[in-house]
Image (tube, rainbow, N blue to C red):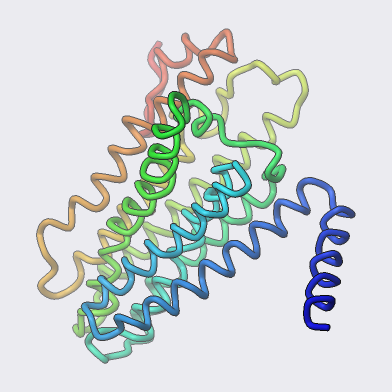
Amino acid sequence: MGYLNLLAHKNGIKSYLTNMNERQKGLFICFWVYLIAFVVAIYCANQIIGAHQWVVVSFAHFVATCIVYIGSFIYKNSSLYDPFWSFAPAPIAVYVAFWPESGVLNYEKIFLVLIPVIFWSFRLNLNWLRKWPGLIEEDFRYVKLKKGSKLWINFVDFFGIHMFPTFQVNLSLLPIYYILSKDTGDVSWLLYCASIFTILAVSLETIADRQMREFASIPSNHRATMRTGFWKFSRHPNYLGEVSFWFGLFLMALTAENYPVWLFICPLSMYLMFALVTCKMMDNRSLERRPDYNEYMQKTSQLFLWPPAK
């Protein structure tokens, strides 16, 4: 009887998925993969809860990434990992804020740090949700990276596409551990400034994405290069906003007592990843698709907002 109930349940799920379009089906799969990843990560973290707090965070982050990778492998689409970049930091920030290693809860500090992080996470997830077509399409960068033998493709998929971004996010989140979980000092006006800077960084990213979305919605702009708004002064103002967000988290840590000087590595590594890898790949794609992009590229700053060359 139990087997028949299980079979009926499986058939019910199959029927439910059959009636969905590809986008709905992709979102359904993504939701369950991420829910499983979240639950398994919490369970595994509880097994080492007495360890250093950031070791617990890093282990849970690693486990969750492995679950998402398994989902990507099963459905043969690494874009299942895309929202993980913006999904994972929010629960991590909440954890170190409300269960600090110091045992001291400072709600003013929690507010100043969590508002920018949650704003950033919500914005990026909404942006992904708005344009993701489902598992019928895979990010062009992943497609380019996954070339060669089967062994090499699986290596790149696991370490390059899944684990490297997780490591990068985990490293770049480290400043919030020092400001939320370790620091017991009073809130200074500098933390207010850092929080406002971080919110403005997310706002820059939001406005730049909206400008590009409006430009791309006009059919005549299909193969044209965006040259208005923030895009007049930077080829990738949305990525400038992203890098600035992580730099803002670093600025928050500078207001903490006894922060380690090597924390500058956190935003620097994020900047280098975008400047040397992500922006380069996006530029190369635009050169292939837009006849006027080479001229635009020669005159316009890669990341920083700067008047175009004449």
